[in-house]
Length: 145
Image (cartoon, rainbow, N blue to C red):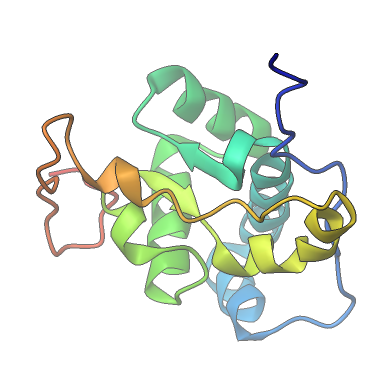
């Protein structure tokens, strides 16, 4: 008998008052749009099943742009910078998937209290249906040519 599906989302993530270099660089390059984008992105990672966002789906990408109140170009530029700074996973971002290991580690206590395993990096998305690696370019442009 199957029980309730395992919950792979959180309603809360820590928001510290002191910030690291990543936020400083994003804010210097993109102003308040960069600051707001980063924290709205973290909110969306929190409610995303498995804590990753797959922007290969147009509906998902359009929602993220609307939610963060930036256009596609600005969002892509910010995400490229976040990947370059290793704030999001560079390899997954090349196929337009957002994964932030630090975010998942930051909510580890929630999963500990649930006596559940932390969601894992969605490496399966790097492979096609026939289990062959998806080709990614080496330009950190979110997989766009």
